[in-house]
Length: 220
Image 1: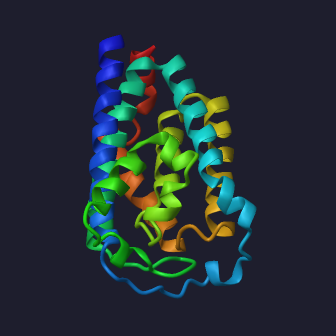
Image 2: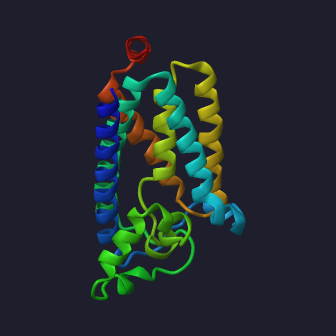
């Protein structure tokens, strides 16, 4: 089981790295901002934007660890599904062209500089780059359809669904993180809705609707 857990984690990381590379190619294209009925009427809160990644990380790591503890086999499937979802997100980002929710579109010129794409890639796959040096704010200024914050926490919630206490904890954390996306002006509303729809579709295709309780018993 340990080998399967480590292998699934490696698969998840490779898919994440591929998604980042696709996102950077999308980031290098000029794109306009679009109107958003929710974002345009929600006040921007700087402190929410500043601490958003830390809040998401705490929620995602704690709920993933809980899933690993109660259902190791289910955790492995969660990691593989998360990897697939990450690849789908990378393709969606490459196909769409939505400008920054807030601020200017600055990366079309920046990423065209020699060596800058590789610099951005290495900074974004490095956790210290994202959490300490704020590399995501620097190199991912455009909108990224669909929301990774929403998708990852919704996915772990779905995998924790058979355990009521963990389910409700995950749901509370999930909606709290979604709220930060609006008050931090990090994603358009369509990114959140799209994340819910695509994540649920991938989960159902992987797990089968209505079968997760039976699989929970198998996992434990």
